[in-house]
Amino acid sequence: MHITSAVAALCIGALAKAAHANTSETCCSALGATTLESQVVYPDSAAYKTSISSYWAENVQLAPTCILQPRTAQEVSLAVSTLVAADGGVCKFAVRGGGHTTWAGANNIVDGVTIDLSLMNRTTYHEKEGIASILPGSRWGDVYETLAKYNVTVAGGRSGVVGVSGFLLGGGNTFHTARVGFGCDNVENYEVVLANGDIIEVNRDSHADLFKALKGGSGNFGIVTRYDMKIIDDDKLWGGIVTYDNSTTLKHLEAGYHFINNLENDPYASWIGMWGYLSVIDQNIVVNALEYTTPVAYPAAFDNFTTIANTSSSMRVTNIWNLTQELGQAPGYRDIFVTATFVNNLDVMKRTVDIHNRIPEEAKAGAKGDDYNMYTMIQPWPKLFTDRSTEQGGNVLGLDRFEENMFQVLFDYAWKDEADDVLFHRLANSALEELTAYSKSIGADNEFIYLNYANSTQNPLSTYGSESVEYIRTVAKKYDQTGVFQTQMPGGFKISAVASEGKDEL
Image 1 (spheres, rainbow, N blue to C red):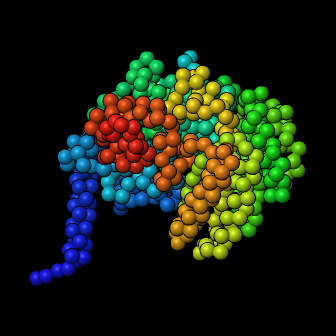
Image 2: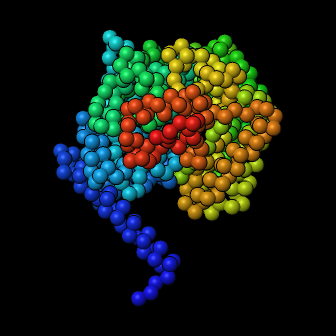
Image 3: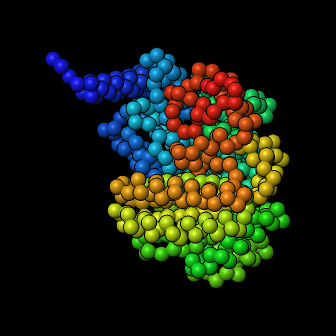
């Protein structure tokens, strides 16, 4: 019998796929042979389907061979130890916290096990210590709701649906960053499960190198099973969402430019500028999220924004739980984030919105579906943020090497029809490429990429600077000597994917 080379290749590929599937089933069986048996769920179960459907973006709702739903750090430890030992150490797994990342494979897997931490979602307030202990499957809305009973809060996410773990491990920009640093700067202690199954407490006095590396270094070291965060007294603030006609754009950009350069004069103020095209109404709008992190209405810091005529406003004195319920897109869409950082320059801001205003026309010409939203967001990223981080002990984001005030752009496109995946990925990437090229042409570019907004096509860790990169690499090698979190857990941004400067990679 004779077969062509092409047919042979197909047969070999099919056999390899089958072998991989068998390996994944063996890994699930290994978990099922432990005391975790009742917490391993399969595709035909309601728990499995609920877990998959709870991911925020539909395009990341992959189908793992099985899902493990642990409830304690000890169960996470047993799971990691089992998966590392099973089948010669080839078991692939993913780790999911809140499930808000927008690219497929970051926190889920196809042939393998997803460790779903969503049942570990409790927040405990320790009043005497001034600490909130937060479990990794929590979302910020749940955290804030619990802490609101005590009129306290923490420096966390600005949308209630965002998960705690990914946010903090990627740095975490908050309403409070100008006063207390990033979210990660406010973690006082981590409970971490290492690749060998050990459970350790990580803080300034114990495993201090890992303590710093976890502040922006993502999932390169282990699985964090508890975050102990510093409390901020009084969770009341003045804020809300204000909408405007797109014709007011220039006034907002001028206001935003000056706001960034003057934030140090009133660090209680926070601004997010959003330009949104909504296909269902075929309209471009301007939206400001204005927050003042103490309950004072119409502070002078917002004068340049509040004098602009608006079409609606939800500004009020409230608590952070209430405020974060209205921020963030609805679930049920497919989504892409791409991001970049720029020197605070009004011309770059103008070009950002020019691109935003033009891109919807390309979408209308090519989209097969009729329900999609295209947001372009501008957010302050001033040197003040880094100064506050340094005061708190520092992190590994590497921002201290920049002296300029900066701002960040996020292109966030969401659509319903899977047939439009290629179109919206192309549009988002082309928008970012055009803006980046323009910024370089006028000397207003910056290399930093915020990990929490990055797409799989970007490499944010490589933009932290050589010192931070090598620090993360060294710490990852020390605490995960066999590279479990580089190879067996393939999702997320890996330090092993960053080119090494004359040193061995993981």
